[in-house]
Image: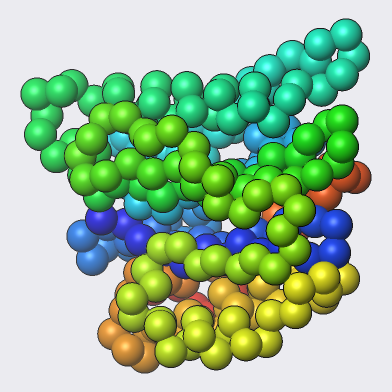
Length: 231
C-alpha cells in the first residue's frame, strides 16, 4: 500500500497541513510529485493517506473536480454541507472498482478535513477513515473541535518515525504565528525524509513539501524543495 507522512496543526487563527510528495506502491516509485493535501474550497482543506485511487484516477484528480456546495443567498455553504459533499466524493471514488475485484481498494484510507464556519470564522478538524478493502468511508468524527488551540497530529507511515515525531511535538507551540507554523510544518516533513530513508523506509520522500493553510482569509498553497533526491 502507498504510504506517506502528513502533519496537521493549529496555529494563530489557522490550520496548517504539510505533506511529502512520494507515491510508492509495492516497493516501486510511482510518482515523485504527488499532491496529498488538497483545497476543497475557500472554506475547506483535506489531507489523505492510504489507498492511492484507481488506476485511471488518483485522489488528486478526484479532488481537482470537487464541486463544493453552492452558496445560499450569497452565504458560503456551512461546514456540515461541505463535509457531506466530501463524504459523498470519498464514497463515490472508492465504490468505482468492481466489488468482485477483491483487494482493489485494499489499504484503507485516513482523511483529515479542516473546515471553516463561514458565519463565525471558527475552524474544526474531522477525521474520516476507511478500513482494509471496505468500499465505504466512516462518518466524519471530531478530531479537533472548534475552540481547541493546542493540536498537532501526524498521519501516514508514522510507525518508523515514532522517536522523531515525539521530538518534533516538543517544539510545537500552540498559537504560533502562521509564518512560523508554516516553517515548522515544512521542516517537520523535510527532516523526516532522510531519517526514514536511513532506516530503510522508502515510502516517504518526493521532490517537494506541499503546505496548505486554511484561515478566515481563505486558503494558501505553497511548495518547497524536499532537498532529497527522489529515487
